Length: 592
Image (cartoon, rainbow, N blue to C red):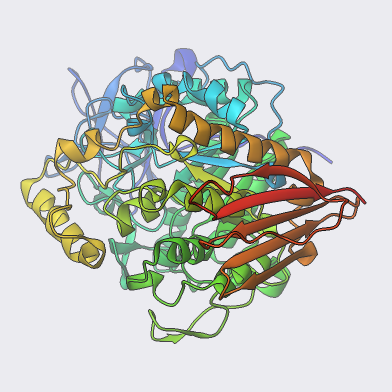
């Protein structure tokens, strides 16, 4: 059977070697379009179906260009590989074959072996670049991380943004180091044995510098999202929009050697066509990964508690490899902090922690007080490795406590219990940058919009959206440079004994998780959880067909409770109890 040709991005600017550069743009509703290069006359483009195409023999990588409309508007390329001067400026031609990779033998990491580390390039280091982030990869390797997850890196307005306001989905942000910087970073990760997962946003595009609608029917008024107009995945003209999104996913996989995608907020993706865009995206992504001979995964963030996201196509599912399990976070956080406002309402009992560990979705069809309706489906039969669990992530830190990290909201004894629950659960664990050494700085929401009106709306909207979580006096304006600067990681803390001790605890737990099959097998069916509400303890037992077993005993109380275990159980790790602090987590193992 003849092997299919490797996928190549055919839109945007494609270098043709000595023949110059081919420019192609999808613009089905325009009657004419021209190519504008720096210091050169505009050149009319040729209609080719729904596209406009032009080959320019003297164009080359490094050239800047834009598309010129009949009325004189100049716009960057919707499929620009590089925006070196910002979202409103011309695009730049990039040769996708120019970078010399050193990861030819890289085949990826199996999803079941993933231990994620989510980071934001701009605040991960003082310099905030791909290049400076490389210097920390040895730290992640030694910690035991197997997959680095990047918050969105597409070009956004200004130099400070979480990334979810990106408007150039194919252009790695220039302030981070652009296209070559990201490729160098991925290559370095693979050298260290780390997979790279990229957070991609297909439910909306940021408001400033967003010119997509001027080229074609990228949006629909049929649906609305919390972030503005919905992407047109099922209306008139949607074929080109679907191709644009699928091209983006395949682009990261092929040109950047990305190992996986975390698809942001799929509950904001609306598609009532016969073949849902998410199912098509998943299939195309996996097909190309198989063609490349690499492990690759596609992971959803979903607020639906709907197993359809993970179920196979044969039962009407989208067949995603995994999804984020927010309710693990909600269950643990509410219990250890007592917080129960907004979407945390309805959690706060040990039974919720048990259900998140042994079943997955806590709301699985029952009544949700926050949503004021019945909500969710049962995920009991899905294995643990289909879920990504965490006690912190970018959203949950910044949205529920004005940037305060969990280690600064509760005593360290309680924090270590939460860490142990995460790393001993059947789910795939995710850490957020800095949590492994109890980072002291907050992680705040920050933007740097150039439009004054939009900047004001963002600041006011942020206050209104999260005032339930905000204590008077601790609100930081997202537009202020302070919000960005305060969110940077304090790597110097690693030299302080208290923070180093937290890091050692993470390292030991991750090492034990990797070593013992009963901790990393994802078998929820071989996981038992018992608890006592009044005594405030929880016991989680994990087993494996090989015969290895583990018991994690968590004492949340001020009374010194101890598990009753037979002699074959050996203590491997404990956080105490310390004098005056009986609460502790203790981990035991036994061989069959």
